[in-house]
Length: 267
Length: 272
Image 1 (cartoon, each protein chain N blue to C red):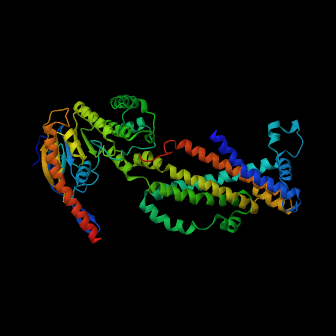
Image 2: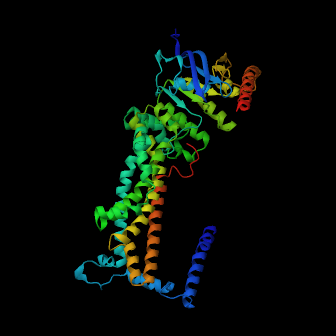
Image 3: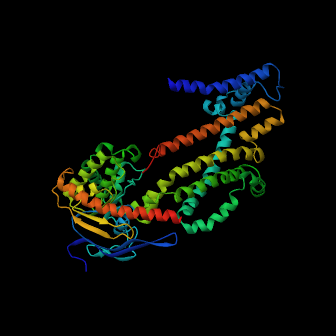
């Protein structure tokens, strides 16, 4: 039974895809109890099912077997209680920055003045106020991702799902946004599931890092990261963890590569 | 500076063509009935443009008088037909295209018929249009609306079908219902395609109006150049052709500046 302390409870989740007439086991027997306010990173090579798991929690693609519950209620469809930030930003290009942020609030049917206040404070929070009238095409990648984060924060959802949100950014912008995300998370106390393939990112951000295996996706290691924040990426403790995870990830990467070569040979 | 040089080089070829044309005429290498000189065309153009009667204050205002010239009246006649035909054709194509793009059922129902009718050039409808509508504006408008219909339809369908699914996922994630998804996401995302379709449809309308005026009506630019042939007025034919060309250019420029104004967000777009 699900732990009553859990915010998100993932129990016995399997996900099977049909691909080229073959069954692909993307996820197998995933159990994960995530308490309220925890920052969890899902870490693994591509094809390990980490995004699949995130999409199952988001409700975009439901699990083949097993249950995912939020506060005890099973997930059946996507919803604004689980705001998602995508790697490709996915801002609406026909809307300005403030229109993008306001969109979720308009759907909720909140009155106009309240929307304006909320949008203004979110834009201020993410240093976007000067850019509020701009269209996404006139923004840098980092700015776009700030807007995408603001758009999700506008929903006031207790859960934030992030699918490699900083993957396409340069190193400095990335660190900058990581720090902002930590600040926001500390302030708003959200439960975050964050998918990444960067060990350093996972160790820098997360309370807990879940390493997943290459097909079928299972949990290889569930690691609590007890380092003091703000974390020093050059500290011996950080690097010891990094080395350990690196070793785990390398094994999966090798399996991934072997599978790819095998696939290529069959093709 | 660079802009000026660019513009200067742009008039070079037209000027050379004009000079060559003038040369042909002055040297007497071609019969003036076959190809009149540029000067003769300009003179005729002016005669075609200016009012036929002298200004008479009893007949109405000066401004009104200015518009009594044959060329102006023809242009108004042609434009009227284009606009009415385009509005009908585009106005029918847009909702059908949205439905076909959005719903697989609607697509399955209508697409076979559309694919059969689409390759028929609007001009092939001329005999039927005259049988059905007789002569005058109705057959012309009918033909033009067919010319506008298919480009708008096909582009609208493609626009809706090509909406990036990530936007729909975001919409669902933000809690949008189907109506909101359609009006706030699918429709704006499809507008670049729809505008492209409208621009092509307008171009087709403009071709069809000239043809239909040659057959069904007795005014308009298409009618006038055909009429001029009867009198061997090649200068008027050429003046009429240039008018048609300039009008077409004006309409296309208007359409494209309208769409780039409305699609400010889209110019130079790389990714959402």
